[in-house]
Length: 229
Length: 217
Image (tube, rainbow over all chains, first blue to last red):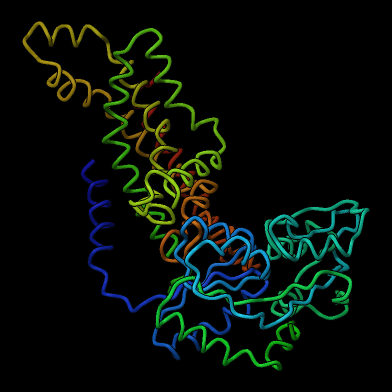
């Protein structure tokens, strides 16, 4: 019993004795944008002298968490309409205009079993899922739904799905060769627009937002799998 | 050197499991003692209530905790949703049967005439509990503590809903594994998963050893 008490005391002691940390800015991002944010974290931290913490998920899930009080400072939403609908009654300080358009690709690795289902993100909570359904049409066939676009990507990556409708950004980040996917014509599906929502006021969050925009040049975004909004 | 991304969820999980186990010991042992002394419908009701998390999907508990602790719930002013203390509350509720069941069995295995003899010698209820019941049920209490600790480490659905997957705050091991798979960082997922498999196996061996000590047949 005394050992358990020791573990608990050390745990509590560890928490209370931790040195005062610099301010952390919490960014929630649609999962398709995670590789981009992750690549920029060190830059943003240096530019604003803060720690940046990144959480990712489907836009619908993140919006739901913010509605319930999740302590995010910034949200990178892949569904501006849903953000405005769901968050307009909350103390959101600004919905910025969309800064990029996400591109979707049909990924079909030759090594995967063609009889396995096709992976898409959940159309109820993820814009990539809705875009995939628009492309697939009325005969969905054998589909498997990931909680978000990243999980749909993981299903294909692990070989559990034969193919998948996934963000081009994730394919590029993973170094998937071009012969394994086709980029879907953006005209075939509702646009997936990325927007920054400033959830909480604060000098540090504003600084991070500014530093982020400064790094999102058109050339940079295209290289990461995005287009102009 | 272990990276912060690996170390942080391990540390948070260990803190959560330790504090939850401590709270479970404080609540679960007296609760098991109380159940043992109840009879009839009240006992059946309380036993069932404690056992509900065994069969309840974790998301059900997570959903109701989210409603209760969230900004529109009665406990909103406490700010517990998406916080570590909120995770502790959820984990205690969810792991309660894993503590109470083995402790209750240990109390029930003690011969009743020991307590009658102690009472005839002048021992009061508290003395009978603290000087007889607790020492004689120590293996069951240790088993409950190990099971409660291990179950808390492995919980996923409820902590995802109540905690919200916040790095360095509420991202526990199970969520970090889920996150690593989504990022296709399978090396990290393997490392964390194998650690949990190993820990779970050791925990089960410990429980088996304690059970054999309590009943060497």
